[in-house]
Image (cartoon, rainbow, N blue to C red; front, side):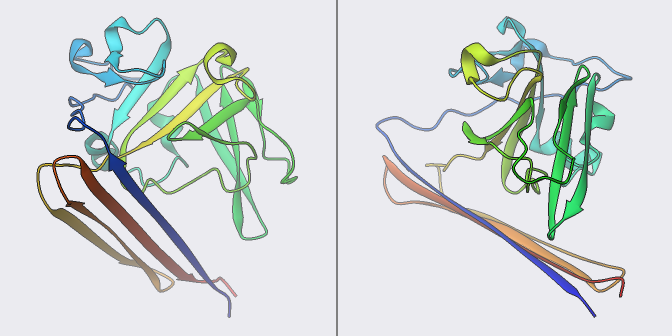
Length: 219
């Protein structure tokens, strides 16, 4: 009997002189619908905050509420809601090897963990240079941005096809808050995840999140 257990965790610590900005609600674009309220969507694809409508890029931004309503818990299958994007992968050595393709350019699911993809995956602007493990669970996510087309000017390597950006939630200075989620399913599936936000002062706050996933193997 094989049992697979995965732990994910993140801790964010912010110290600044102003409150963290609040992002307006973002709307998902899919093959069957056009994004609405473009003037209200705020993205940081160009390294600074700007309205999606004013961004001179081919970009799709989906926030946490939209991801939850679509039932998306990881990027696997997320491509069903984004035109010109294909997301797949293989399983090797217990980790998902991602295969991202944007407008027909990409790769990564060859089974070689050292292979680099033509679609860059970023977590808070930190590059995931290898496809091994890039199909991350969407834990404590503020939004996901998909930039279509070459992004070498802004992001450098691994972005000939485009870029996928995980943007995690920032610490909140407005008060203590938290959440927890549990899930059970077939083959003894047990998932639990949560997060905690604690402000220490007007200029210092911390946000921590965790997740545990386990499931009995087929054999």
